[in-house]
Length: 208
Ligand SMILES: C[S@@+](CC[C@H](N)C(=O)[O-])C[C@H]1O[C@@H](n2cnc3c(N)ncnc32)[C@H](O)[C@@H]1O
Image (cartoon, rainbow, N blue to C red; front, top):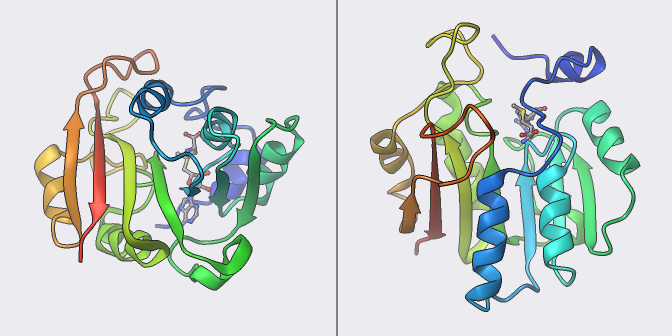
């Protein structure tokens, strides 16, 4: 059954929202700076919720154009209320599965997609569609970098009763291998409390 994300935000039941950007993203932003990455990128953050990751990227990369996408108008209203970052952050209400490049601000493809808790939020039957959707929004050779929640299960969340829906490194490879090349991947040393050893970072490049 489809999750009513808007109701979660309206009712203030958003246990995934930790009030700050994902720790693996914060580590990656430091690493990208050390590597001298080109920061003038167009970045899409699907399922951005209230925008913590959007703002972290926009703050670290003031020349980047960072677009947060979400289904929930209430989440995006909360995101827009946060004072400006000094960078270029923007929010778009829409569905990743039906979004066309023309719907994006500027009507252009993006250079990079940052994934965090969108992949685990969708029904597992939609994962192939997720790969197609992300690939269809990226420029040739564009990047999909993300932190994937492998094991979200606890007393409250059981396998088969998500979201969140868990996965495995092998399943991630199987999903992405046809469209993306794996650049590198690792178990993140810093996570939100309680997610230690349960997440997996991947940097992928659109092939072909
Ligand atoms: C578990 S929440 C994570 C939000 C945010 N990434 C965070 O960690 O705070 C999943 C988010 O994905 C959004 N979402 C789910 N399916 C979506 C879709 N098809 N297109 C765009 N957003 C979607 C939901 O509205 C929700 O805000």
